[in-house]
Amino acid sequence: MCPPKALSPEEDSAIARPEVTGRKVVADAALAAAFTIAEFCRAHRISQSMYFKMRNLGLGPREMAVGSRRLISQEAATEWRKAREAAA
Image 1 (cartoon, rainbow, N blue to C red):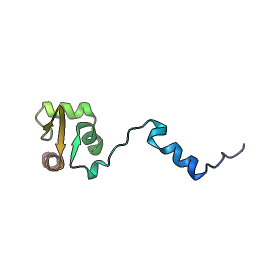
Image 2 (image 1 turned 135 degrees about the vertical axis):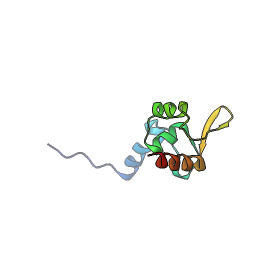
Image 3 (image 1 turned 45 degrees about the horizontal axis):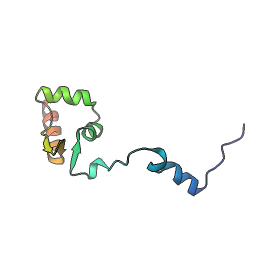
Image 4 (image 1 turned 90 degrees about the horizontal axis):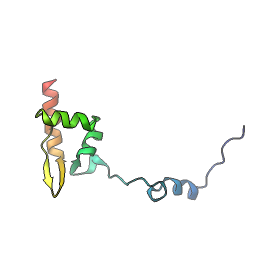
């Protein structure tokens, strides 16, 4: 069996570019001032369905409305984590 052909640096970087792969460029959530619900769930390793279950029980983080979007500030996420740790 032959080993795979090594890619040149130009070919390798071309494969990973979002415009080639069609993937969205996602900002690092740790650097963001606020999370979308999807970003919050990924950052805290919970499913979106669990997020909405917890929110419906009054156990979710504070949300803010920005236009038609719902965002969660870094401060609200920190408060939520502290509350969840205290309840554990």
